[in-house]
Image 1 (cartoon, rainbow, N blue to C red):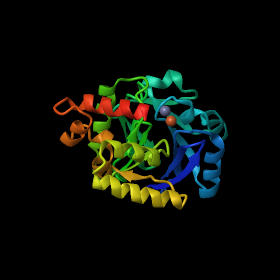
Image 2: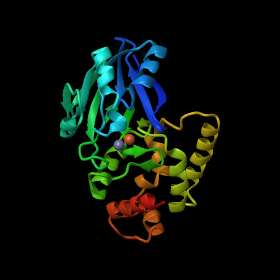
Image 3: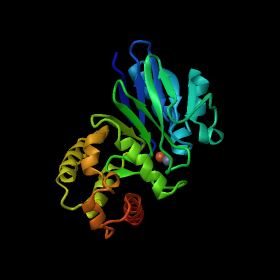
Image 4: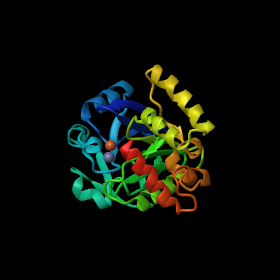
Length: 255
Ligand code: ZN
Ligand code: FE
């Protein structure tokens, strides 16, 4: 049976997301920004929390774990490289490891850069990816613990997923990301189309995700650092892609 998804806001601009296996009733929360909205989501759906799948150690992704675990006795899965920085961990995972939510099977993709041990979860049967603060729609996470080359390689791993993969990220940053992206590629028609779509979603009070990997390849400047035109637009024609990525990231930091 296909996975079911429930998406909802948490904190100021975080997303909460539940992935549910209707066959077994198992449900995972991707990260746990805060307990209350996740409890409300469980109430609303009637789903049983069996797992918390942690992408990285930051407080806005982990603060709700203790309370949720105490109430639901759920299993907490976290990146091995950050296990010491996440409380209440039951199981640690690394590149290629399988993660089960009932009958659903996800695969761990290491995507360091935002933090040194950041991981993403990909569920191939449903083509769903949970990418935390590595990839955002029309953006990417700040490179806090890693370096730009590391982050670029992490983004390439996500970009290599099937085009029709729907991805869920940690934050609603899409509108601001689009304003910045237009400074890098003012003539990108796919980006302009996405801007129209996002304006409508925002006006209707709707989330701008999930987005697909295929669409982002055409729209997101951070996934386009190896496109000649993008390199040229930041004055780095002929430079290695990761350097172009680093320049775009640096400009976004100052934007
Ligand atoms: Zn973070
Ligand atoms: Fe975050």
